[in-house]
Image (cartoon, rainbow, N blue to C red; front, side, top):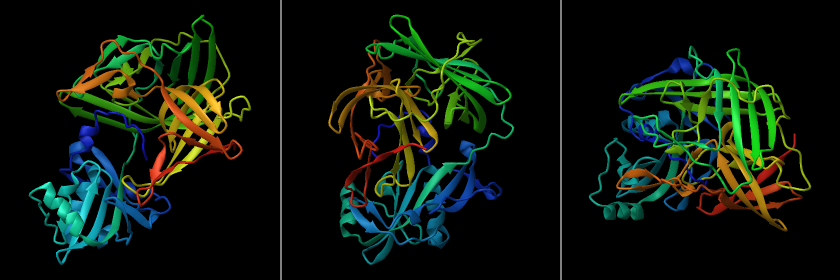
Length: 451
C-alpha cells in the first residue's frame, strides 16, 4: 500500500538480524491464529529484550508478485523447509516480514529470501544453506533473468508478543497536547528540544487535548477547539483503559520506556494507543519516536476541570451537508511487496476533526476541510496531529547523513483528493492503494460503517 511512513528512531533496532534468541513456547498456549495463518513459533530475542512471534501467512494468497511479475504460490511450511535453510530463514524473519521463493538456476534448486530491511542480492541460497554470492549487481541481475520455475513457498509475518504483566503504571496523571508546544531533535541518546511553534496557523482554530489516567483504570479525553476570537468548543469522552504492553530498554546511556494501552470509550469506540518516552514519563511522552512531534506534556492538574461537552468518540452519523462524515473501513490485501491483510479506518466527524486506525491501532488524529465538491470528486485538506512529522511536513530536512531542524518552520495541511460514490457509501482516497500480484495498482475501497 502506498502511504507515507513516519521516521521512527527505533527502526535501527529492527533492521539488524537477530544475534541470539531462545524459544518461548509457553507464550503460545493461549494464542489463537487468525484465519489463513499458522504459528511458526515464539522466540525471545536477547539482544533486543523482546519476544517475537513468527506467523505463516502464505495461505492467504494464490499468486504473489516477485520481481515485477506474478508467480504462483506453492505453500511449504517452515518445518518442511530444507534443514540447511531453517535457521537462516528464521533469523531473517525475526528482523522483518520475509518472503521465500524457490526456483531453478543452472540446474540447481535455489531459494531467494526477500526482506524489507535486507539487500535482495544477499538473499540467494542453495538448498544446503550456502549463500550464493554475486560479485556485482550485473551478476545478480543476470541471475534474475536466468532463474525459472519460480514460485513462492513461504510468507512470514512477525509481531511483538505483548505483555504488561507487573508493569508500573507511569501513565497515571494528567497529560496535555496542543498545537503550540513542539518537541524536536528526538534522538536515541536524548529526550529532545522544546520550542513553541504554532501548528497550522492558516486554520481558524487550534486544538488542545487533555488526557487523564486514573489508577483504577478509568479516565477521560477532553478535546478543546479554540477559535481566533477566543470562543471554544469542548468535548468530553470518558473511558476505561488497560495496558496491553510495556517495554523498558537500556541503550547508549539512555532508557526507553513504552506502553501500548487500549481505551474503551463510553461513546462506543475502542482504540489502542502507544506512549513512548526516554524520561521515565516524568515530563513528556510521544506517540512515536519521530524527529519532530507535538507530544503530550505532564500537567499538575486539568486546567479545564469541571467543564463538560458532548462525546466525540462514537460513530458519526451520515450528513447531507458534508457527505464524507462517517466511519469508513477498507481492507488492504495487496499481493506484492508488502503482505498481510489489514483493515484501515478513516473517521470524519461533522466538526471537521477525525482520526485514522490500522485495525484497532491509532495512527493519527487530524482536522480537515472540504475545499471543493464536483460531483463524486472531493478535494480535502488534512491537518494531522498527535503523530510524528516527516520531511515534507516542513519541519526538518536531511543532509550530510544527519537530520536538521528547520529554524522557522511553517507547517501546513496536505491536499488530498477523494471520490465518493455508490450512493455516498463508498470512498476512495488519493494515495491509498494496493498492488495486485501482477503489480497493477488498485484503489482501496472504503465502505461506510453505520452499525
